[in-house]
Amino acid sequence: MSERKRVVEAVGAELESAGLRARILARDLDSHAEVALASEGAMPLASLVKVPIALAVLNRIEAGELAADEQVRVDPAATGTASPTGVARFRHPARIAIEDLLTLAVCFSDNTAADALLDLVPASDVQRDLDALGLQGIDVRHRLDALVSTPLESLDRSEAHLAYDLAQARPAYGDGHRIWQLDVSRANSGTARDLMGLLAELWRPERVDPRIAARLRDLMSGNVVRHRISPDLMSDSAQWSSKTGTLLHLRHEIGVVDHADGQSIAVVVLSESSNPASVQPAAEAALGAAARALHDLLR
Image (cartoon, rainbow, N blue to C red):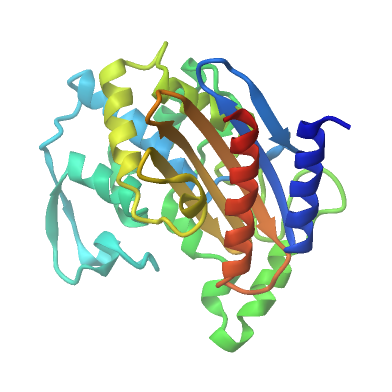
């Protein structure tokens, strides 16, 4: 058995013992060497969708259709989400520049800021931009406030496990899920391979404007959510730029490690947990270790 196959099988076994099923893809962005664990098939994106939304907005700023400093009014009545940070926590009307909404959406994973951007560039336009890049495996269909309208929000905290149990229930065949936000035929969804294609375009742009790619890389470098993959992939000589996505039992992260010697390794982690809990430090640690192991095979 080759060393690569042995490591991938060991990673899969460790994730399974942690109650996780994961699709992981790692790629050297220059040599294009890859290593993967069960990377095929679409999954709901949760907050990962904020990256293509930001790309579509930046495209229109570059084209002159939007102005980066244009002020958008956000009212408290429009901030009824459970986002722990950002505009959802505001109590008074605010006027926020479009470029600052991008910072809130990507760096702070602010659902309300992302929806304010979708008011300017609707999901259909975001989808057209993805299709133009050949990334048809990513589907953008709905606003982000839908992510806090699952059965979990209607249950008492003592009964939250029921929502996680329901989330884990899989359809007998094909698409479909009793929680529509987890149905890949209805929700924002994507494959690990197309998400990798998106990262490749941002770090080694061919069809994306290099200035837009640089701005989005900068936004992802400012991601404040760093409890999942970041502890295993960043160091004084390696910068990890990423976006996380979390919804019920889903725990995702996509990003790129830029090493001081010039090597850039992109990593896509899409996962679902069988543990009926919202706080799962052991699962987060297992995902970080898995990403590190596949990264090291390329490094």
